[in-house]
Amino acid sequence: MTIRTRFAPSPTGLLHIGGARTALFNFLFSRHHGGEYLLRIEDTDRTRSTPENTAAILDSLAWLGLAHDAPPLFQSTREARHAEVAHALVAAGTAYHCYMSAEELARLRAEAQAEGRQYRVVSPWRDRDAKDAPAGVKPAIRLKAPREGETVVADLVQGEVRVANSELDDMILLRSDGTPTYQHAVVVDDHDMDISHVIRGDDHLTNTFRQVQIFHAMGWPVPRFAHVPMIHGADGAKLSKRHGAQSVTEFRDQGFLPEALCNYLLRLGWAHGDAEILSRDEAIALFDLDGVGRSPGRMDYTRLTQLNGVWIRRADDDRLTAETMQRLAGHPALVLDAEAEQRIRRLMPALKDRAKTLVELADSAHFLAHKRPLPMAPKAAAALTADSREMLRGLAAILAATEFAPEPIDAALRAFAEHHGKKLGEIAQPLRAALTGSTISPGIDAVLIALGRSEALARLAAA
Image (cartoon, rainbow, N blue to C red; front, side, top):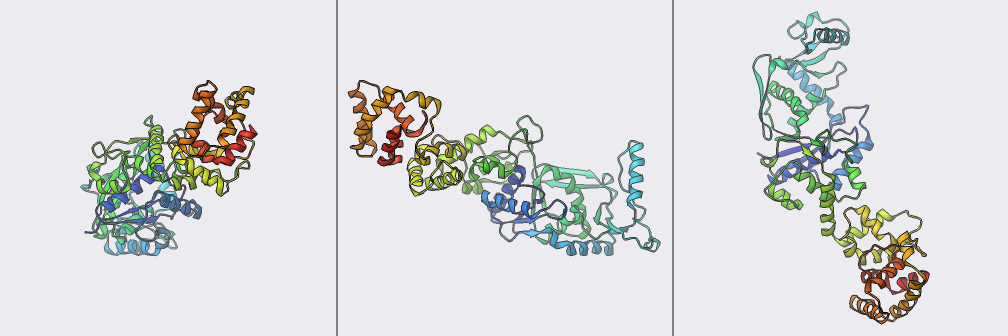
């Protein structure tokens, strides 16, 4: 059997972090077993589904590196097929036309509520002759669900779960306007896509019992199910805006790398020994559903940020330079030309050692592209006293005659400090202020080399 999984987001909003983890688990499971990973856009909610949200979801999945193995299937294009199957169920006697009105349903619900009992639809049309149908009324199609026994699901994460069939009513498959319900459309699409494993959040568990009944009614093979626990906030409550970012777009904008986010989501609910930092290839080799726990994951933004710093240090310098240039774009005080790009690239090995997000990385590289004169942070301005400015004039003359390479620069700075009877730090701090506008930066010799002789001397002169 070919393993086939699917991720099926609804384009009613951006891709939530929980959805991203579901997509990741489906992707890794199919890749681990040499199978296929498919994408289905469940866009049947016509009032809330938008092309903009669809584009954002596709963009987020591409950014995460979760490439599907076939073009996306759009559920809204398959209404004729959903209707065909619903009518086939009626013909087989496992579904029926229901002529109950909305008013009748509302009255029965109100009666149940008044009596303090849960309402389950008991349609008088389940076994009634169609010749009694009211004239001019378009019926819905309801599943003739079993009323005895249990519906059992051997879940690959939750274990065996079951529900008494008496707890489930005859759900609508096709509305009176001919549109399919979610429960029905999902089953038809999963069958037609040959999905072997449905991996999704455990908030879908109640849906699964209903969907299994539709599979049985059609005589179709039932896929294996795996219901993954939800992601909560650090306080154990449902993840919300008060906890922090929720969508993949937000995490990207906040400067997280896709490999860091995927690495974190992988470990949020799945474990393999002490494995912590895992590349995509390592994750594919190790991932299987037996490592998924049953308890909800708790989002730890601090840990994610720390992990992002690890992946930034591992990242290619050219890639990080391009990311930094993009994040600095549009700033009116910056000159983002080829020379600025070269400066950032030269200093990137030192810059990325200090950054935990791409936002921090861009902030730390800001001075490399800034027009002269540099704005001075208060501590930097305080470091540029009259004496230190005079000292920098002399140092500039030395640097003008020094080869701009690590060893010659280090030797020149040490010799200058010794000649003036000062510690190296007493020289480096005003020099750093003049070159960067700050008292915090990578090593001063690396900064000098990144700026280059001409720009470094121009900044010293301006200070």
